[in-house]
Image 1: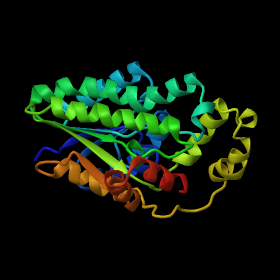
Image 2: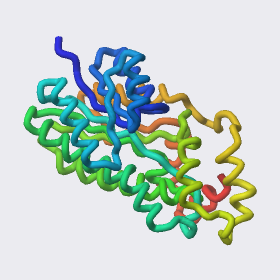
Image 3: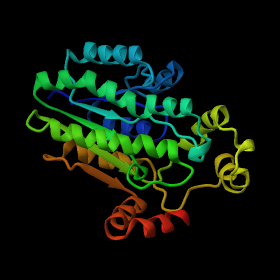
Image 4: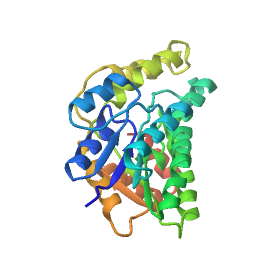
Length: 276
């Protein structure tokens, strides 16, 4: 029996890393991509097929898709757009170029890779495209404006694509994790240090009291945090359910915020989120 094939981005750690191994163990042929060749080499040593893919570089994405097709004979059953980064900062402190930078990876990269894969899936008559969003894709937290905005935009783009792909055999799915064990915090540090001049901010005290401690101190797991395997389980469902749901939620905060957004007035929701 021919194994199902999937291309996954952002596999160096966290959600992508766990999903790649989990699907490989369940019999899928996984193409686990990372930005750096060193991370790819590590994954290859662990028994995965891996090659570079940088979601901020169109040429890199094109090369990765071509490599995938060369290995499969021109087909691809699924794509899991997962790679992303964030950095904490008040919206007023985020330079516009910083916002462009995060959108390049977190949204435009998803869009470009999806556009390259759709013709393949359309030609074969089937496929599934999973986009990794977040609870922050529908419930904004303060000091997360750059990341929030990329995920909100992704939800709108994904919802539109899901409707447009009706009848094509291509299913479009949102994965919505809450707090998941990953290196997102550690990976955000270089971006924060590059872009955010917190010392000159009107919110300097808030950065000192809250943001810097959370960013640089290893405080263990957050409340309600789940391991990356919790996302892998939902990814598996999204790939194997005969009729996949539009959204797969993971963690208590994601379910809770979805309920609160439906039943509470906006000002009450803002009041509650401001105290988190």
